[in-house]
Each structure stands twice: as structure tokens, then as C-alpha cells.
Image (cartoon, rainbow, N blue to C red; front, side):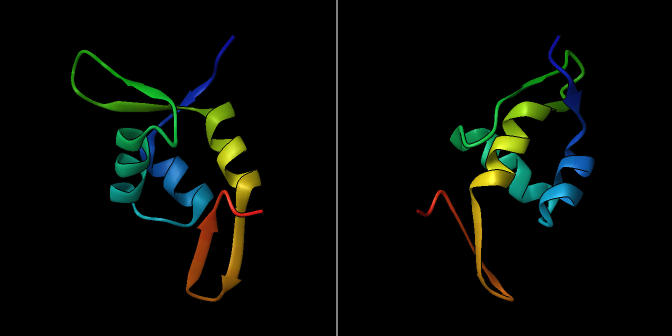
Length: 67
């Protein structure tokens, strides 16, 4: 069964803002859905996959999907 988390929790896990989470969802970098009330939920597996692809190259620059 798929587990979904709130944007604030996802933002905390990634170390980014809630706005960044919204942009990741809009771009397809994260999977999730919008509730009937308009709130977003993020697929935990999608988030964990994104976290594993992150590469921090300095204290203020993070590249996602770099190899």
C-alpha cells in the first residue's frame, strides 16, 4: 500500500521549502495527488527516490539527478 505524506514533512526531509515541494510535484520530479480539498500529498517512495538521487556539491547548492 502506498504511503503519502504532507508537503511540510516532505520539505523537512529534503531540506527545502514547501514551495519547492510544490514545484517538484508540478514538474513531475515527485509523485503525489491533490485531495478534494485542494491539499497535496506526496508519495513517500517517490520522495525517498528523489533523496537518494541528490548530490550536495556545496553548502548552498544541491543537484538532483546528477551522476
